[in-house]
Image 1 (cartoon, helix red, strand yellow):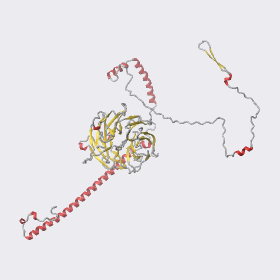
Image 2 (cartoon, one colour; image 1 turned 60 degrees about the horizontal axis):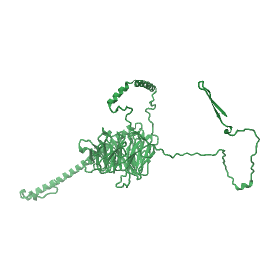
Image 3 (tube, helix red, strand yellow; image 1 turned 135 degrees about the vertical axis):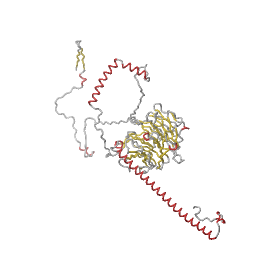
Image 4 (spheres, one colour; image 1 turned 90 degrees about the vertical axis):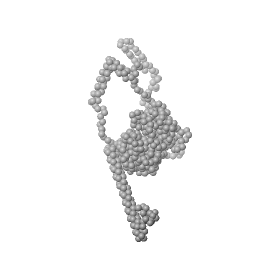
Length: 584
């Protein structure tokens, strides 16, 4: 075979290139001729060989000329993602211009605006932008076709699916004692504090590090927080998500800046810190965003400023009014909606204390005390939709309270195991969560039923020790005593507010509040009636005793007259004292 290519360029000389290939390289030449049938082989049957075989029935035989091949593919490689970034402030300025100086920036902008190229570029870009604006005016690309439509999830069965499990990477496993979600819902990260809270149960060689986990990369921690002692609680700063505060087992307060390394930026001196483990803390609403408060079982509440952690700004001893008993704090609730200076404390004794940092009188800083639990109050939180109502979790039940009443308006049934934590749903006013020591997570939906949980999930066989939910209401993290933290996703029915749910829950809370107030009023009336009855019976007894005493005195008087004795002859000390006269 031969081939050639001819090329001609604007009358230039013709160029030929010949392709050659030998005939034998094309393979054997095909021959297709008509030929008669030909016997290649003739194999005759041998009946004597049939005795060596057993007939199988049925028989299915497949004959295929091409060889049979099977293909199997398995992906066992795990892909790890690494996120890196850098801080970019403002760039593109010439070297001789300092962008931090306002005068330099104004002078340079005026110079650029007078440039002809700048004006031409703006005119060109202005035309393009004008076309885009006209297109947007013609077609609304942000139009919502189903605005106001709400999906009805009342008929679907509630469920929660497990996404991943964060496990303590240290050799000696510790319990996940506290969980805090990043306030930025787009940055799906959660900080988990690991510690062994048992007294003198910390083994040698135990790690003191806690970790920040990324939902998108659960195989290894995203950031390690190292401290002088094991971390009991940790919280993100709501104004700056790069800063976290933590309370230590030795009572110290520390804070980290993930941009500045794994060790704390600053920590409180041990002699100025709590004498017991710091079990809970919260960031306060302030202009600087650096103020926080901490509580401990030593009976003190400390206020701190992270710019100066040398000593607490202020302190408060937890004593109930008209009592000298110091109460140990286990949980803290602070919500700026209820008041920037108001907070609540859950104590070891099962009492909830309502406190006000800026009370008119120092003795009024600790206000109402709510009694009801038989053990430590492990969790305390206000309802995000109705701040006057709050929930406390302790012993075997969860209780819903109203600020103005000292008795709970709603209470769950007593469970067979201890309740160790829980919280309200941030997206539904009638939904809250409780975790138990037997490894179960209960989801309560008061919008549909109040006697039993809507959903119960067996998370693990170990005791659950911590719980928190992301602000979107879909992702929850449940920590256990073996160091595992299970990330779960709730169904839309448990995270999406139902029609008229807020008003219905508000009416239910108000109805229960009114009922509890009526019971409280009735109880006071019965106490007053009992007091009046006791006073009346006492007065009757006193009047009867006085009449008998007067009769005896009169009898003695007449006896003296009959005998003819004068009163001057008898000393008053020698006068006979009738029974009951002293009382009279």
